[in-house]
Image (tube, rainbow, N blue to C red; front, top):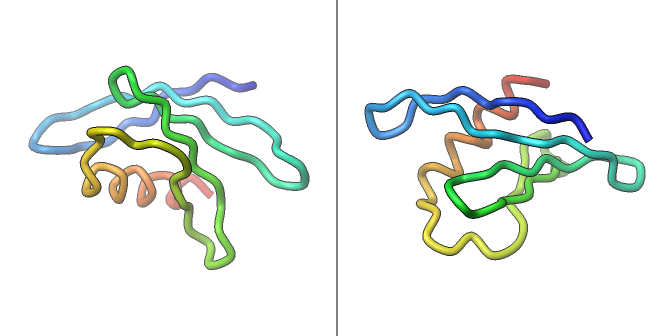
Length: 74
């Protein structure tokens, strides 16, 4: 598992969210830590990413920004 940092701007603040990338079958998944919540993203058929699992109180607009930043990394 590779441990990296995902820089992004959200709510007028610059953030650096820790992330881990790991192989999953023939593809990969990305785990992003948002506070105490680990959110798993996986590539979808349209070239974007989908979030999996329990998001709790993570704002949807923050999830969308994370997806945008992940797409830029491709």
